[in-house]
Length: 91
Image 1 (cartoon, one colour):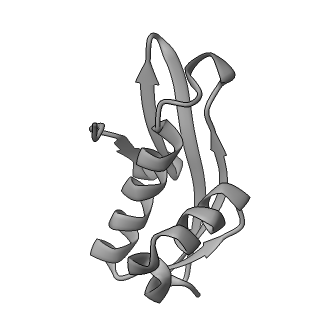
Image 2 (tube, rainbow, N blue to C red):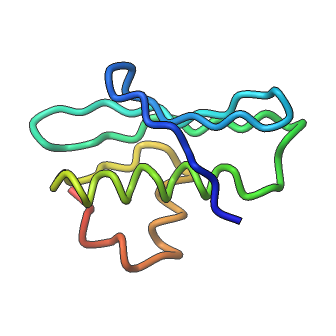
């Protein structure tokens, strides 16, 4: 199941709410490089693929915008290793 993750560009954040619980991926954008800082999925909604959908949304956005990616967040770094189609985005 793919979620319609919300991108709040002014806040530099991707969000998804499930069962009333907010999950987020935070990033910083500088000079065309998206540094993905944190992916947070509360335990109550963990194990549902939410973090993966947040990571995919962020990486797809980076690709569409022509940004490079610096995965500071360990989850996103591991996600990129498992999905080689995103490795060309690495800064």
